Image (cartoon, rainbow over all chains, first blue to last red; front, side, top):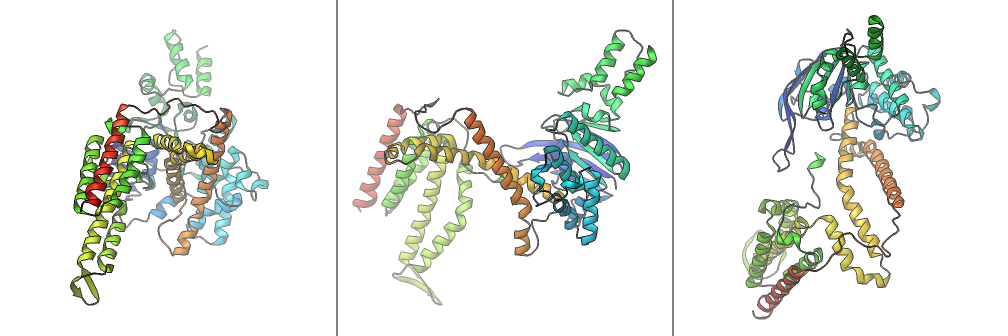
Length: 280
Length: 267
């Protein structure tokens, strides 16, 4: 079920005076089961990129393959694709519309044409997976807190049982506790369901603890693509494009400069702590 | 998809028309529209065409942009012309089955067509050279005397500028919600009419909620800055007539006189 992006270009407002390229020659391979962080500054093209992956946006040139098939082929069934590549938009709680949370989560599976029993089963399962307390199931989604609303919205996509789950800035506007909860929840989904997860963010700090691959976008191009350790070793270049490596990287680099023989590859606080303990 | 729609299409450049006071442009456009209904002969239309060409030239807006607005009305234009062509009584030139084509019919059809094209072109020059904010400012100032009749002029102008400001925001929002629901398997394009109307619920409910939320936020922000309507309110850039505005008024008046003299009375 791998996704392959082959030399994608995308131009906004083509053939007007406002034309500008949002994506320039982007080629990527998304194999099964990876947990990927897609990082970039505002306007770097990350949101446009993920919309290519489930066919909401078609590239100006280049091709997107899902499971070996060109998704922009006229015969390709995009509805099936969208069930397999689940996309959670930024501020997904703004798309809630039903009278209660449970019915709202049913919307996705219902569009897949499943039986009533299967729909309700999936909705229930999804709401459980996102950890929404039972007493909220039959409440209006508009009465919930921001964090809970977001859980319901994410459940709405999970209920379609996608093979690939893409989340656009799922922690935007949440407090630190809510952020950790949502990220922990996504990590848990990845581990228990074995699905591919692409986490879009502008903060390295957010994703460093969770992902096994980081793709950095800058001005519509892929700037770096690799394991977190490898990407963070370019911390100076990252700063030049307006991003920053996690603070741990800076601490380790400073320690190294000050003459301590630490390994600068530690990316999480736990790793760094172990490393410092080791040399002491 | 939706972002391709342009409304209140201002064309950014610097020209004498752009710099004119919006009041001049509003009243000038109105008078031009009136003049189109005064004239009813060839010379009158020629004068109007010359005036229009002069305005376009002075505005430095590329012709392409001016005729873009024409696309929206071309169906209306076609229907108007066909109806006038077929339904005007008079001396028939030729008859096909039950349809009579008359000289008068051809004449009115052409006249109506030209009139409509001029009408749209004339008003697009105004919208292309004036920002929505300038337009509402101008309108407010022009309607000021109506305050005596207890017409809430300032409030109307404020509502207009807020409405105009929110059009692109809501369009963008619609696009976003549409995509989000499509990602959940929603289908807005196929199915029977009833199904398609039903499929709009997941789009309309979030859109209304978002519109109310934005309205609420805006009201709060205005309140926080002590906004309380037009009473005693001053402007950062008050509209002041300059020499060029006076000249423009004279030119418009001259044009109107020419129209009346040549387009109506003499022939």
